[in-house]
Length: 100
Image 1 (cartoon, rainbow, N blue to C red):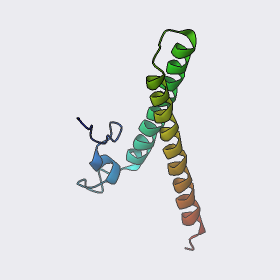
Image 2 (image 1 turned 60 degrees about the horizontal axis):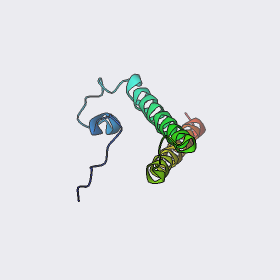
Image 3 (image 1 turned 90 degrees about the vertical axis):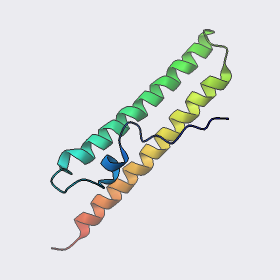
């Protein structure tokens, strides 16, 4: 049985963690680019799940397994996105509470 490795959704581990790059390379756009890619991937998962449900409902696909798998992937992707959003908002609020 072959097990696929965990994917970062097209982003490299260095881009996500900032390791291996100088501070000049980790600009204001890198975090935004990672978040933008994350949003696009989450949206793509939701769209794929919608298409799978639509195909199952119209009879184009008889595989309920694939439909449920697509729905589970979309659900997990959305849950992770909401958790990341919550953590980003928490971090922003913590920074705003800091005294200068």
